[in-house]
Length: 247
Image (cartoon, helix red, strand yellow):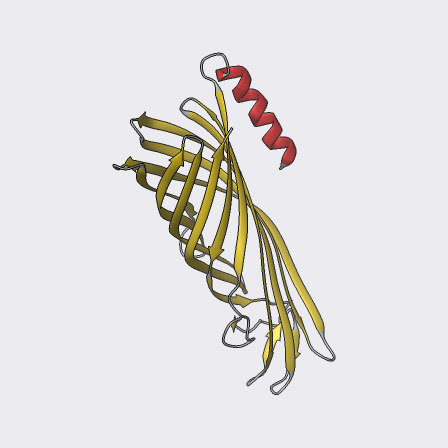
């Protein structure tokens, strides 16, 4: 991912650097999220149980920090974002479950963990960019490194997957009086009911200084992957705050 980001940056600097000065935007976000997830991990002929990580395993909501950096070359933008997500829980099972071919019996105390590193590398072209009003198209690759684990006194099972997912989307912003603006974006892809991804957000922005923007908004992330007898259905949503600086 790092090598690809550097290559894209070089290409666009060479292609557009003589036509527009480059601006680097750095964003720091804090996401107050609400989490819901259902997984099913099978192994061979042992079909896994549909497990709700909140209700069945006692996983709690968490808040997350995300960093983004954008290289702006006029109407062209190269974007990269990274957010590490991690949820943990401990609960006594009320019924038996099957995970990765192993059976965890009812009344067993299970410690669970779900980790997901979320990278996103993309290109945005602003069709409209005037008077603080913007409308752009986004082409982005989202890369996921996910691991789920269940541990009891006698069992310790883990399952992981890594996947790059290409997405498309749109971004928009409307300027308002008194240094305010509203905006948002949505990116995603659908391959039918078995696989789809949506990441969308809307926000209100305040620009108190020429190179600083403070924002507050709401974000919804939905990832659904179903393959044979395996399932990952992850929903994360909630408000966020953001601080962005231009250089």
